[in-house]
Length: 240
Image (cartoon, rainbow, N blue to C red):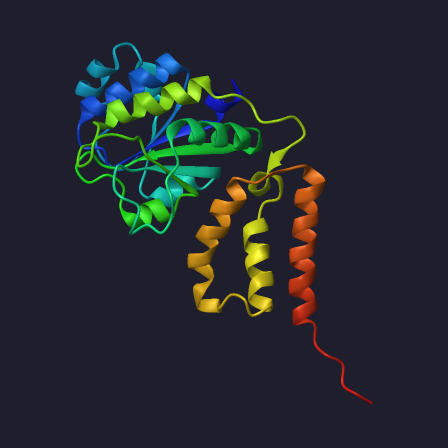
């Protein structure tokens, strides 16, 4: 399935090797193969291998990187998971089934990352803002799931997810750099202040990640954005 092959599971500083092994076991069951750890315990820890129950190949091929940016460097969509209220994050979370459908739409364009935070604190606000969308699993207030349990629920939805409608491609995957081009056009139109650019890029990416377009439609948006920004920056010729 294209979505499963394109999905990268990212664990930020996992502290319990048993959780890493349980995630690897779930990955093998559902058909996921790409595991990246941002620091934390080694994927080949003996307790991780024991908990993996035969998913040794997932652990053996897992990569360990230093930063979340490294883990997401070649992805077209990043989905961060959290059980926290989203008031301080500045965006609305989506549910697992919707996240899986969104990921399926992006999978033909490149790698999709599903990111999980530490067992103790989950993902920090800065890490969640680094992602295009935020995913939450509904449950009782002031309660949360274990890392491996949360992963299993999402992996199940990933397995069930369908494919995008023929002829459409998510805008971010169809035209890389479309978010930056639109930000440039908004800045040129004085609708976006230069110091707001980085913060507003998160909003643009969230919107564009949900927008499925025909390739020519996405290319037209890019052309309009670049054309407008270039026209506004073109020097005005002096009057004779």
